[in-house]
View (cartoon, rainbow, N blue to C red):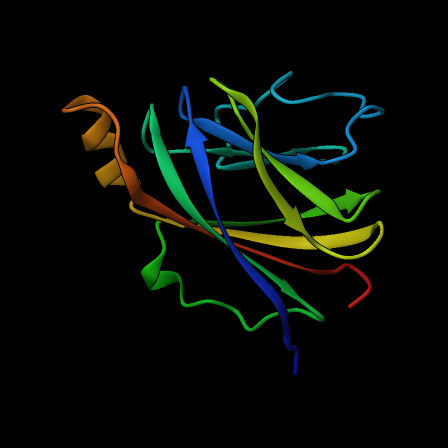
Length: 155
């Protein structure tokens, strides 16, 4: 049974219905955030990058990040609006949070002491509330919530 190695909470500033998680050592990435962002997919990828679309236009999403030593148990889909999985490669073992509005944030997610190949599952709740907030008063904090789970791809 897989064990939780680390858990972090970060804020993701959502702009234009989007934010990203990108390899922290991003100098050699062929497609840096936000180039070629796919606004039609909940989760899309480029080498060293995860692109995530949001239900709301402009707000701050609460993101819980878990790093596991193997595949975590499947989550109950009833509690989530969206869920998707992808492969992710990190050369540094660290991932930065990116916004369409503000660029790279100070938040850094630690996966490991070095690079590696990962599998990631992204789950989201609160999409309709974030959309309604965007249409009404504008911005909010933590209305839309994400759970991002990483585990070694070899598992």
